[in-house]
Length: 182
Picture (cartoon, one colour):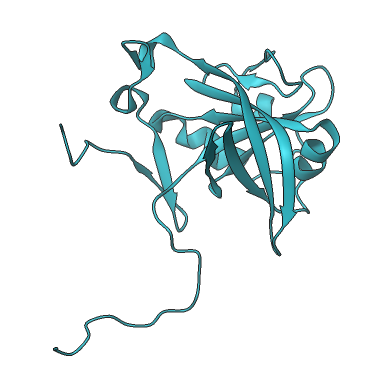
């Protein structure tokens, strides 16, 4: 065997790419917030569950704890400006909905609002929380899914129409064409 062509790097969460979403939390008629998160993922198919990792120091952390639910709003590539804004200011100090120019709309089964402008919204009820260190992991059961008609093909979400984005080391990347087209 030849000489290894890999280097050891510092241990870091270099899984890539990761989805980037805007999580809304709180109560649409009271205190509410939106937080940009990239530490998210699918956790189970049955029941359908997702995970979001939030620092306990964040304003959204307390809202998710208090109300027991959240909405994962999946952005399209043209929403990157909203993601950057909501990831750079605190909801303790300003209304991110007004500042980002996004519209909170009532959800079906959560107190947390949907973001009207985002094409895919997953209403989630908190099933569990695990403290991991810098972040706590919330496991949310998806209880409702809302999708704009424009991103559907034959009644299913079409990733090429959604134009979702990913995040890696401070930068946003669009998802491209499928590698396997069968």
